[in-house]
Image 1 (spheres, rainbow, N blue to C red):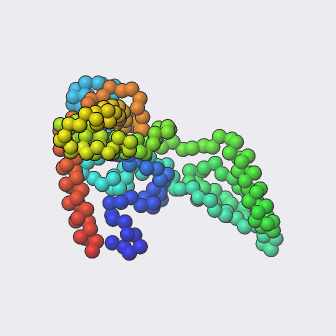
Image 2 (tube, rainbow, N blue to C red):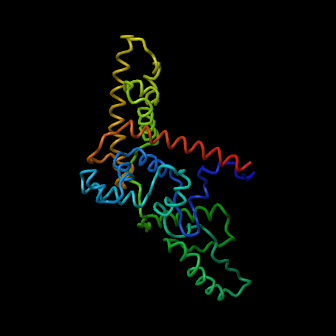
Length: 302
């Protein structure tokens, strides 16, 4: 392992979001999308089918099945692969813009001591190379007299940008786009944790699962493994059960929408309930594979 790059090989790097012909913003929701596909009942069902016809018959919802099958065909298997490997193989091309990453740079330097007519050819060259590779993004070509003070230049640039952003800015479309809403990381992570812990002990009462998943700070002081029946704690248990039930319902909706390429979303859709035994087996098998692969990669890097 490189002394400069101390991250383990399965961890995503900042440079993984930008390659020569594709780039994407560093958005944590990409990995959440990947993780929610892992728990989606319909997506897992698709992975067990040989073709679309078999999947349509197994799911029993033709319209939804076609959407899920398309997502599965594009995204691929989400088990038995590290997120970083999947991102480099499929994610960047699906969620990224298929151009070089636009950057701010000095195109020309005009000077009284030079023949500025030659700059016309340099400008044409920039437009035909760097600008074209970046997908011809909406840009400003600005003349900045360097004899001015920096403070004045910055004020003038701000005014120019304020004026420029009043007009619509072209944004290139990507194959997959995240849904614009205010769904927070904590909520999405809580849903994943709740699902995983329920799969770990599917027969446990929901309030115990909620405690292990730590979905509540105000009602999280109980012992999830307690065998005593303390009636004074019934109120907290009821609240935890209600919170967990509601979060589980939302998590299932988010997972099933993700399987149809819509994330993060709680739009109404036909759903199949979590098969915690089946999903638990897949999770345990995948965890064992990950641990073995991590140990192998670390030993190879020494």
